[in-house]
Amino acid sequence: MRDEEWIAEGTRSGFLLLAKDHRIASRPLEAQAVYLNDARVIAFARGELTGSQMSDICLTHERAIHRLAAVRPPFVFSLSASGLRRKHLNAP
Figure (cartoon, rainbow, N blue to C red):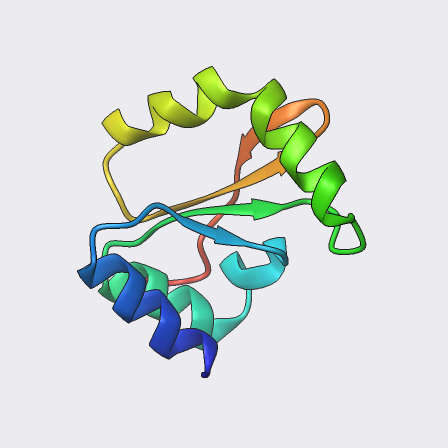
């Protein structure tokens, strides 16, 4: 499934989307899909993390992630061991 498709489908289903590549905010097709679908995306800052490492980071920053429910979409936040950081969305 192409990135544009899962972004649209996940957003329609009401999910906060989790991505392994923070460049989703800067690639034109993916950024446009985030923008047009009013998606809420958290992307890991480092794509080479193991599943266990990703899980640990999510649990460490669980409260901050939950607060994103109140942030108006569309958005992409990068998630790393040091926390969340809003990414510039390469879209209109």
